[in-house]
Image 1 (cartoon, rainbow, N blue to C red):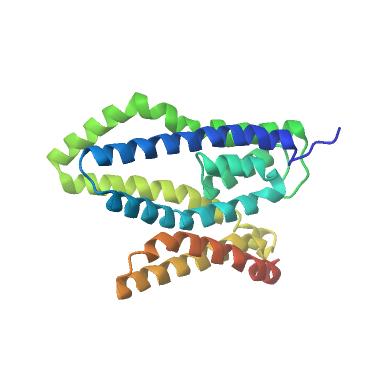
Image 2 (image 1 turned 180 degrees about the vertical axis):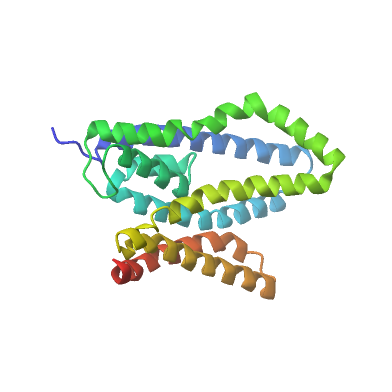
Length: 244
C-alpha cells in the first residue's frame, strides 16, 4: 500500500495529543477563574481578561497556520499540525526536518515513504524534548547561579544573558547563509533566496517597531511577528521567480 502523508490514522494520533494539551489549557483556565474569584476579582474584570487574552492569541495562531501550510507539502498536514500545536516553531521544525531529509539524500518537496516519514518525525520530536528533560535537572542550579551572578555584578549578568540569546539566534541565522558560497562556486543565485526573504522579514519587523514607537500602540507588538512571517513568505514567490 502506498504511504499517505495525510492518512486519517495520522490525524487521529495527532488529534489525541492535541486534545490532551487543550484539556490541560481548559483545566488551568478553570483553576485560574476559580482562584480569581477566591481573591476577590470582579467577574467583569475576569471576563475582560479572558476576552483580551483570546483576541491576542489570534496573532500567534496566524503564524502557526502559515507555518503548517509551509511544511505541509513535504510532511503532510498532521505532523506539522502536531509539532506546531504543542512544542515547536517554524524555524526549528524546518531545520530539523531539512537535516533529516538531507541525511537521507532528500530535500523538501521530494516524495517520502513511511520509514522516512517516521525518521523525520523522530528527529523533529525527540530532539526538541531535550529542553524539557533538562529543565528539572539543571534549571534550579542554573537559576541559583544566575542569582549569585546578579548579586555580584548585575551588569555582567545582562551581558551574559544577551550573549546567550544572540548565540542562539546566530545558529538559525547561520542556516540561512550556509549555502551562499554556491553563488561563487557554482554560480547559482538560488542560495540568495533565503537571505532576501530574511531581509524582507527584518524590514517588516523594523517598520512595526517604528510604528509602535511613533503611535504608542502596543498591540502592534502582538502582530509584528505574524506580519513579518506572512509578508516574508509572500515575498518568496517573486524572489524565487527572480533568483530561481
